[in-house]
Length: 86
Length: 198
Image (cartoon, rainbow over all chains, first blue to last red; front, side, top):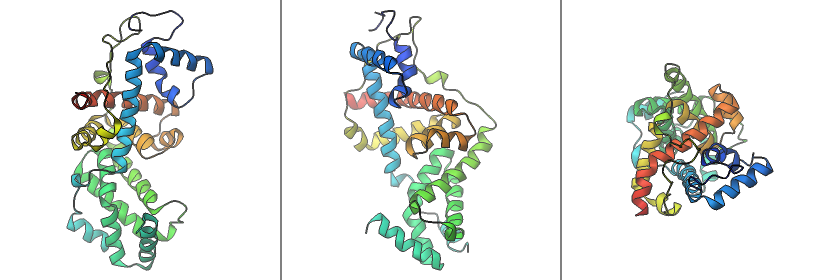
């Protein structure tokens, strides 16, 4: 699809604009069809969508199991302040 | 012991005012709450303050915790509120944009260079310590007002309308920022994705 635009087809820019609505299933049926058709013929946008999804899932997994070594032990003064807060 | 069983035991101790339970509460949840607060405020010491305040609020208001959700989810909510209070003061001073880390299109609306993608599995990436480190740094690099939307909506499970309310934005604005934050994050991750694809 790169630089071989057919007028009624979505451009790569439009695909990027519609990406979130596509994933949230908020596109109209016709736009969804055009979106999926574009993906079938455009490797760039297919790769783009795969990386986009990968990025979302990677972020989620990072927050589900954060690297505990990055934060480490609770500072003593904070622990003491919390334990004696009441 | 399962997470639910740990929470149940903790709650009993907290309601009795048992200091050993306070300590266990902090030791159990410190890392994940500090991680969350630190991603929102991007300052280790400010994150410490947010999480300290979270635990103090949780302990002093434990009788008001109705147990409809999990204790963990409640602690996450308090941490988010604490961190956003700090973030609002910072963000009120500036309104950053992501224009310098977005991809370019040509006049016909197509990529200036074709996007090749990174054929590496999600599992491989999830197991890489380097990817985790790079991802964390990349999230921290996003402007405050985009990072907060991304964290709340994608990672903390808030709905678009809840994020809009918390951040005092329209739902449309939340959607636009979320999309741009995801794209920017993906662009920031490109070097590490490329490295793992080779």
